Image (cartoon, rainbow, N blue to C red; front, side):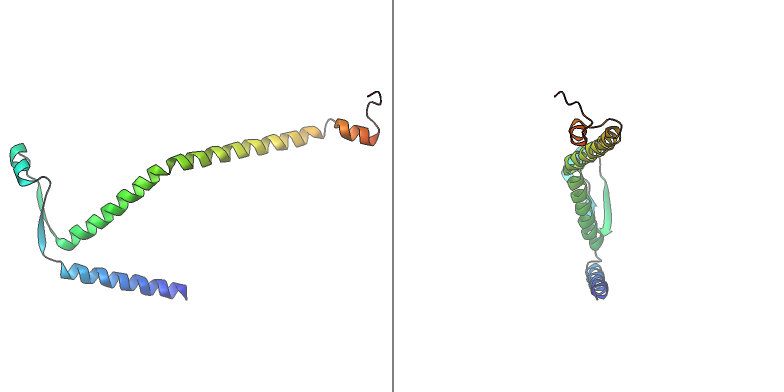
Length: 121
């Protein structure tokens, strides 16, 4: 049920994007710098694109910038999680080592309970 609802939503979204693209086919001139600055600097980079390409490109660029920003912001949390995992694995190894070592020597409390321990104490 949810799969068909998702497909219907995606189809509706695609249809809306196509309608917006068809309604905004006029070309616009994009400049790297304002005209006065480009004349002063001697750099005049311009490009003509359909308006819908500019709008959709702006949306995609904004999403990418947001994703990268969030990824950089969460780097501290990912590093802390990695350290915690590493420490947990180290502690697991130590527990396994201690469990295997405890089988070789009998614990003092267990020795007292079994009656094999030192009775002088």
